[in-house]
Length: 272
Image 1 (spheres, helix red, strand yellow):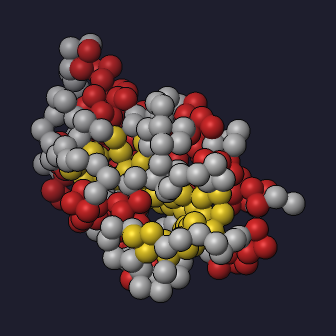
Image 2 (cartoon, helix red, strand yellow):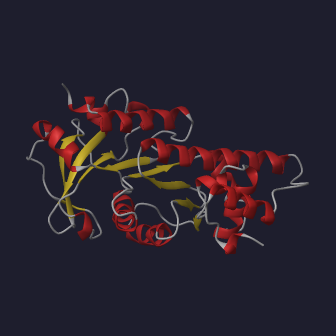
């Protein structure tokens, strides 16, 4: 049996391939991370090595100390993850202080975890706390229609949430808390990690203006489905704009009726 044969590895690899097939991962764009469960760590323990060096994360994530994560590699192409997983992804272990990581498996031809590792781990720490450990997946992609929206809408949570909700009836059910919007920032560092983390305190979807989208979820299917739903709604938005704009739409009262039937809470700030 190979390390990549385990179900969580297969789920990770499948998501990477599906995201590329959707057109969300040009070249080495986008990244993915998964927080392993204890039994999964035990399953792959025979495949792990302990000869890697500790490297600084760039932030401190003490609540993740001692945890194991499966992550995509920096500069690696999502299209190659299903073809060469041991060369494009890695299992990393966080040290006892939550300040450093060590590669325990993968990236066999060299490399390091995604350049967005600080943002991923800070989001993981936040979602672990907020969901009592249920959320385990953080996914970043570059869906074109959502990015296009960031050039024409005001960069605020309400405008994006309301427009995405109106484009597809399922959206208020799939992401009832709405979406957060972050104006353009230089990616890959401490500042954008902190800014994204503040929005992840409220939302499971964070828009990076003129760049892409971050989603958090319990498993690979849920997280991929969340990204897919947001991008499909964005595609409808782009088409509606190209056809001359809305002539009618879903009203706030319609949303309230929907919320009652589907037993979801929609924040008043996104309703008129």
